[in-house]
Image 1 (tube, rainbow, N blue to C red):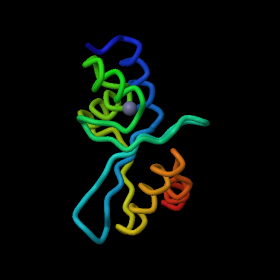
Image 2 (image 1 turned 180 degrees about the vertical axis):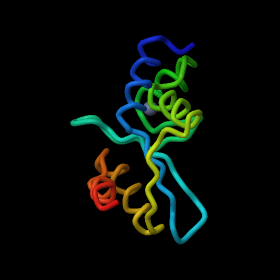
Image 3 (image 1 turned 135 degrees about the vertical axis):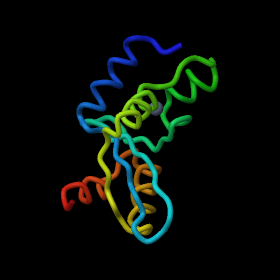
Length: 115
Ligand SMILES: [Zn+2]
C-alpha cells in the first residue's frame, strides 16, 4: 500500500520536473529517468520498476508499495507532466552508464541545459 508520505513526495517531484523522458532520436526507444536533487541519486525507472534501494527492499523484498520515484512517474504519465529530451542513442547509453556507475549523470544535466 502506498503511504501518504510517499505520495506527497511523488507529487512534489512531479511539480519540480524531476521526471525526464529520454527519447532516442536515431532509434526507436525511450527511457525514463528520475532526476535526483542535490546529493540524491538519479534513477532509471519505468512504471513497474526502479533501480533504487527502496524498490529493492520495500517492493521486492517486503512486497510493500512502490518507491516514490515510480509513484511520481505514474503521476507524471497520467498528466503527461514530464520533460522530454531527444538525444542520440549513444548519448542515452552514456547517461545510463553514468547513472549505473556514479549514481548520477552529468551528461544528462548537460543535455537538459543544451535543450
Ligand atoms: Zn525508486
